[in-house]
Length: 430
Image (cartoon, rainbow, N blue to C red; front, side, top):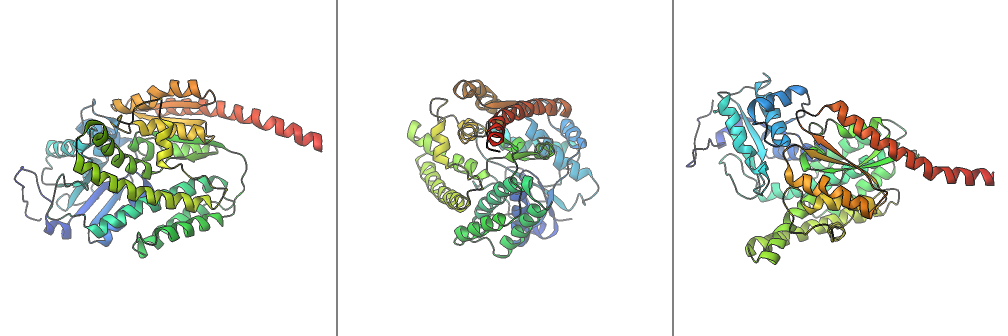
């Protein structure tokens, strides 16, 4: 067992010795994104295990270690990590836990303290917790995000967004089952071998789009369903009870906004702070540079997808932001802020009226900009078929699925009304 060293703040540090001997356990959120992230860290010499566990015991573990007034994502993330620690799969003297820390107003910044409290409660204080952040909030001698790693991770966000967007538009129509997922796995391996250089980003995105274009598909009409909401519940299968798999069983095409918009949003709201409140000038300038870089990446992604008319390209960030005018202020930044409202509006404006808004217990900001804005959106867009689904320890999966199926029944009825005139017109010509 490595020597335990504590920092000046009393925090157990992840040391250089631990880097060589310990396995870092990392909770899952976005499958494609986190697979790339895991492999990038492994290539840099870390031992990383990505937790893909998904069972009811994780919720029970979370309830035992986190106050039930804490937001549901915190309960799940900490529950998944503690479940892994106790599973018997790992040597408890040779593991460390990794968790993201944003530093914003969301309580997600405090998950790390709740996790340490849970370890102490279970007599496991000797297990170090590593903060994954690029803001320098908590530093460890054995874990450092160098500039080359950060560049690869930035590129990974773009590539994973691209793969996920195109896979979701191809998988429901593929003629040979499994072809899409095989192509995604193949691209992940290829990108890792090329070290995901930013300079070759545009060409690689075009190659990815071209490869998905070659998949044999049968484009029969299907219900298209957009999924929005709090970032963890929207993306993580553990958080939303495998929502995308449920929609696939219902023969739907799923549209989930990419992570790029959220990353750009994080930079954008610092710029808004500087503009409105005349504060954080240095942070505003850094955020402006970060936003500019990611907007360029997003432009490359959109350009590559638009070469193939059968694919739906995401909207530009500034277009989404413009849609929210008249709904709420761009200073509304807690949680997903105005972006959540913007994602619903962008879907409706692009003809995707069927939307599931995922709402976790304990996330007040997202209830305001999510469920709280649905009535206003419907007033301006009567065809919008939006349902808010609550996710918390007490919510039953059956109740969630019944509400989703009710929304889908409305969608199917509206689709039939649209196809009837076309069938009559075809019959007349025949």
